[in-house]
Structure formats: C-alpha cells, structure tokens
Length: 315
Image (tube, rainbow, N blue to C red; front, top):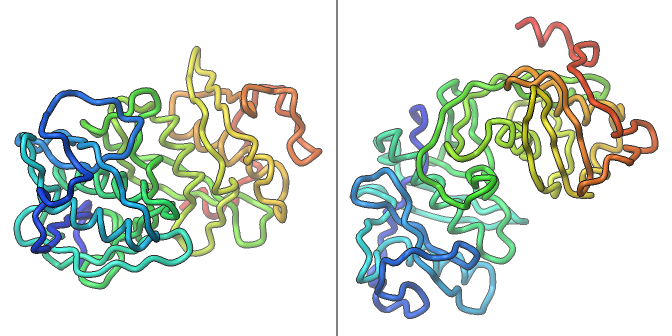
C-alpha cells in the first residue's frame, strides 16, 4: 500500500558506471544555465537538486529513456551530490506509450522520507521529460499507482508540475490545500476536487493552481476543461487581481462543453485557493479575444458558483 507522499525513488541498478557516459558531466560543480539538458541529482544535505549538463545521444525515445535511466544511477566525478534514489529503492521497469512514460518502482519506495521524496519526484520527472516524445510521467509503487495522502492517484506529472515560474530552480517546496474545478461528465457544470499539492517556494500558488487544471484530474467523473497543450506564459497577482497569460492553445479547450466552464474553472479555482477576487485572462498578452465566439476575455472575471454542481460543492 502506498503511503502519503512516498513517491519517486529510483535507485536504478545498472552495472554501467556514469563515468562511461561521456555525454554527461564536465567534472566541475560550477553553476550552470538551465536552458540545456540535465540529469538531476540530490545534494549532500538532501534539500536541493543538483543539475548536471548532459547530451542525450541520437536515437529513439526508448533509447533516450534507457540512457537517462542509467545516468540517474551514478553521479559523475567532480560533483558533490548523490543519486536521487536511496539505497534499496529500485526502478524495476518502464513502459512508454503515446507521450506517457510509466515508471514502476519497488515497494521500498514507500519508505522514502517525504522531504526527500518530493525532490526525488521532481528530479526524475524533470530528467525524463527532456527526452523527445515524453510529455509526462506516471509512477507505480509495487505495481500500484502512486497515491496522495487522501488516497487518490497522483496521476501523470509534467515538467510544469514542478518548474518555478520565474527561475528554473527546484529546491524548497511548499505544501498547500487547493480547490480545483473540473468539468462534470455531461459538460454542463463544474465539479470540485480538493487536493493537496506541492510547489516550488519560488513559484506563486496561483501558477501552481493553473498548472494543475491543465494537467487534469485522476478522479472519476472529472473532465479536464483546458486543452492539455496550453502553456502558461505568466501568472501574477496585484491588489487581489490575478493576471493569467496563456498560449493560444487555450482557445481550443473543451469544444463539447458549455463555453464558460473553462473560464470559470480557472476563476473559481483561483478565487477559492488564493487571495484573489478577480481574474484577467489573456491570450499571448492579448485580452481583445473572444473565447469560442461566446465569451469576451476583455473583462475581469469573478467567482461564479452558479456553474458548480451544488451537491459536489457541499461535500
């Protein structure tokens, strides 16, 4: 049985040493620009991730996954760091299908301390999602899906699950309880999911909330309302107004649902989870946009409970 927050712990058992992987590491621990490709390790204090520059060899997606799986197991010389997974925790199998990478860990993953586990999870997702074709990762412990503290499946995770909105660092994390609104099965109302999330201390909670809405819900009967390829360009809050700037992919969201639902999925989630009273949504900086030829984005939106299933809201 998976325990709360006991997620990724990959001590990948490979005979190949990292020194033989000429594409990774430069033998120095100087600071680096995080615009390239990196394998992530853990510092000696177990409170920060250590990125090491790496070049993934040309080949198939499966080749890239295998390469990074090996690279994660041994830290190259010259770096004061340790592998993400502690001794005794193994990655037993991987499966790649569509754009999702499934990682199967041993039962011992559940014994990882929560403070280390969140960094381990972040490092592994960030590492594998750099492989061409891999968009998200899903974890299994002893063959069972990874669960959160409420007993719900954690589900697929992307780089945006962990990335900081302004500085690409993954160090300290904050734990927050949030209210997320997704669509119901018939596409005519919002359904509430209460969830505990972790996000970078350098990342606004508002950003983390919008990112979770894009990722969707693992709960039955919860329908994602925002197109999955929507990118968050920026999120900022001033005087209780949250300004959300999204990529144009947002305009293709939920064609089979009531048009207002995608808008109020964002608005209601931010209003309930953050110190926000109004929300301005822009598309690549432009607010002079009609969403699905129905809703003008040139306005400040406020929470509207009339779109929410009341029975669900009152649970």
